[in-house]
Image: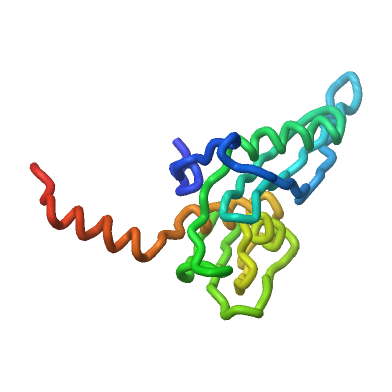
Length: 177
């Protein structure tokens, strides 16, 4: 059985609760399956959606035509929206995560820095509404794995005030055994 990632466990945001979702196609790949009857061509489309206010999602669509693959990818991304905690226009804290062979480091930056990132990570940060961040992609730069590593990192972010409150309430009510 495969590993369960934070992005899989993160609470989802209902697409109806989010207004003005914009989409960005990160990758389109042509896939060829060679059979005895010839070559079957299909397409993959990696699509990210977000509202620029902290809600962002990622989806991979597959179809025989590019527009259908993009439409399916967008539908999957809308179903997988998560809420990203922000501190101003940046992140609340530094985070480094790994997804398969890709690893990504996200660091908060001072106002005016901008998004210092490659194309894949930049698309997700822009859609999430994060305007000041420093990033570093390590290991494999496969766009699918890198996008998943970025979403994994965003899913593991915690708001410091909420986390302190959660830990205080957990201390006040000791766990029973």
